[in-house]
Amino acid sequence: MRRLVVMRHAKSDWSAPVGDRQRPMTRRGRRQADEAGRWLAEQDWTIDLAVVSPAVRAAGAWEVAAAHLPEPPPVTHDEAAYTFEGEGLRRLVRALPKEVKVVALVGHNPAVSELVEDLTGRWVQMTTSALAVVELDSWHSRMGRLAAFGRPPGSA
Image 1 (cartoon, one colour):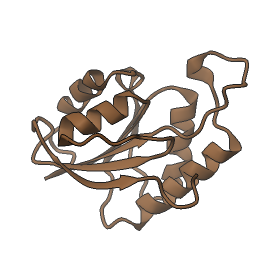
Image 2 (tube, rainbow, N blue to C red; image 1 turned 60 degrees about the horizontal axis):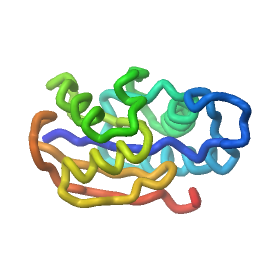
Image 3 (cartoon, rainbow, N blue to C red; image 1 turned 60 degrees about the vertical axis):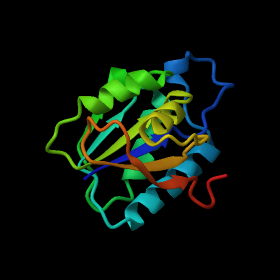
Image 4 (cartoon, one colour; image 1 turned 180 degrees about the horizontal axis):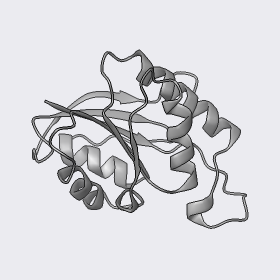
């Protein structure tokens, strides 16, 4: 079994005078990412790899969340994760190394919502810092199971 932990980036600061890729997190976003990290640390599995969008808000959210993990995984900042289309993320998932069992994928909406729907047949609205855990037989599986979904308490 493979486990894909899909995370949407934390709340970003739209008032910052920068382009989309450079938009930072807000204080609320830092709290959201912190709560997501606490939730991830409570799980009984170890993340083998994190694939993170290179956008500042996504990379920052993962950095805050991963700080809670007893064993933070290696991180790949992948251009393919900076997409707003689910099919792009689906291709990224299919290309994951077969030896990794648990992968965190940090990206953007609507791509992350579309990816979860594509993999599970269930639409979930991935609000900022929301997490969806999808269990798959392999990274090439056409359909998986939505094992968990939501935004950690305190991150609203």
